[in-house]
Image 1: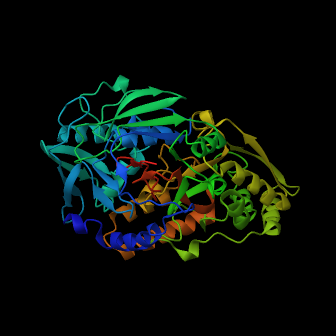
Image 2: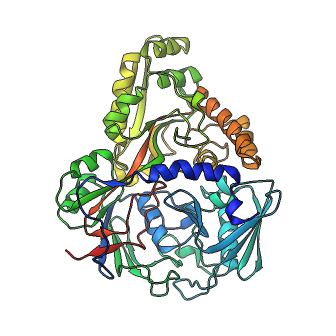
Image 3: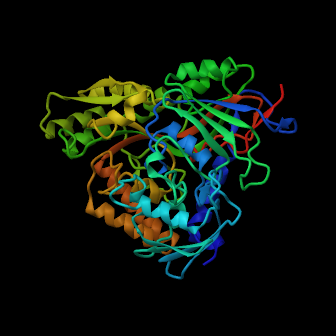
Length: 515
């Protein structure tokens, strides 16, 4: 089976839908993006969040760490702007007839920043580390169908799978899948890096900055274009915006809808937007009271005014969610899985049946780690009040939210980047997933995810995913009010950087035009 057909029928349908979506990229300021005057060289200054945890690719969690790593390392495959899987360190791949084994041909012209030649041994080392249960990488839930990784020769690697699986290429594009030097000192991975990417990590100071220098031996001819990239870690969103307006930085990432609106009409600034399967969510630990009672979760679902939450937190941008991670724009979406309409009176009835006739009080933890999360929490509080649900909001600091609140408190707000259905389900809903933030344990869902991986046709896979969506909407392990676009703010002399539907913030194509 060749590269062009490896994804079977579903990939072409998926690509068609998202190609239309990606065509919606636009700028809010009337500024030229013509690259005729672009130049090589210069320093690209990026303002991002300050919630750094680790630079170890296998354990990546937070935005600044992910985006630094994306520009220092490479995957063997990656997502294009059209959300198709494209070669990166791999040249091509093919599967056997029953999709139980895949063979990848690798590039022979790649060196790590330390000077070591990139070879199949590095892929083997990287993937075996990711699937090692002792490491507990969040990637393991998406890769646990791999039984072995074998270096056939220096530039050929074979993946053996536990059963038929059409999703291996997509799974290898996950952001923890950065290929490591097999000779790396693992003790250095949290603060140092030896990648094959377009930039070399020169300095990383937690809470302050990361400095990246141009890799003169990068394998893509002529790239990168800028000499230096500096990530400034800035916890406050307004501080990032003011720095962009004042030309102290060139790019703001991430950018929420309210922040984007605040940039509209600002001279010298533009905003790129693209539709996405990214979403914000209210996650509840299903094994902790009161959320262990499905009637309480259903009451919260009925007390969710999705329209008002979407308007309050994202200026109405995006599309409504159905309390599962597959958006209406996805070819696998099941229209019968839409969430029930806002109905506070019905929510009260569910609460009374659950043993709370006088209402209930819950604590929702949030932080400004992503534009719109705090606003979503406030809008949800207002939405739930008429149902007799008192939502007490605990707002914490952004720089410690992922380490100290998420996966610790029983009710939290979270944002998730776009993933294909297999990745979106495997990383959160599988019983043994390290990022199972809802503590949702379902043998039925676990098996259906495996069944979808092994399905040979688009229609079979669509039927399975449709069943999963209906179950998740009915059981309400998490509330997903809406799916949001990806936004990116930048100075208008920046070319070659666009909002990516998968939030892949990679700046190897960035160029700075002379003013």
